Image (cartoon, rainbow, N blue to C red; front, side, top):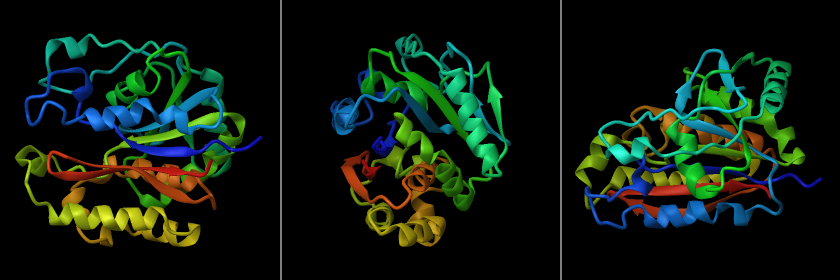
Length: 268
């Protein structure tokens, strides 16, 4: 069976797609929303399940949601009250979660099953756009709090066999995530632009070069200005690791709140 592609996507700012936006133009997030709504059209066949790696969960050892009916975690603050009533009743997949744990354990990376944790907003907010029917099984995988790029590339590589089993792997973050700068909405962002250009070049490079460059991402121009802390970038490493030798491409590019934002697909 042909392997499904895998994706690194932006998940926006909190519940930004489901409220009247006041910190900039009303359509600030509309292009991103349209991209997310069209994502499954890029997949050659309907996935049987999603495995999502969100910037908003870190655990040591790496943890995997294993409940059959995960609740939602409204881990955003200061937004309109109605955004805390959003619902996304996508089913969990305990058997798939156990399979993930087995793949990671076989690769020398212990993982634990968490049967009580729900989906954070890095999963359910884009999920509401990607598959509003909430009828696809979802398992969420945590990052390791070390945020070590090599470890997360290897973690992704361990999950690669799932792509041939109809599982769609999605890394959910933001390719630029310096909140202090975003709140100022600068007209110019040279550090962000430099990092964005580097990231596109790195993700579209051949496999060996791609992994080498992503492992050393912090040395890239504008890297630390774009990611003072890298939790929103590291889901990309998981996805790039799962891609193996397959090529990467930039499938979305935008400017939001004065910063460049990109999404990437690998394989498929």
